[in-house]
Length: 82
Image (cartoon, rainbow, N blue to C red; front, side):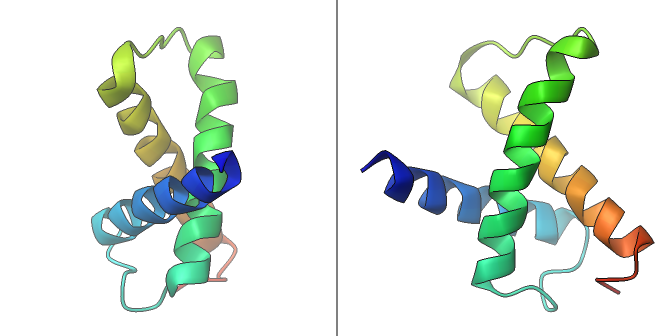
């Protein structure tokens, strides 16, 4: 059941990040899920090293969205997304 929740929440986070980065039309649901999960994991690793300690669910979601935006930015730099 936890895996299902990770996929659902990862998809939503990836979708929000794709809207922020204006790549929503280029990304499908699979890319949204991948970007959301990878971005949340990346943000979870980097945030404490940067001195960012999100409090509560809303803080964690905002950090995860920031991580997903970072992943989309990296994909744009590598020209995987336009």
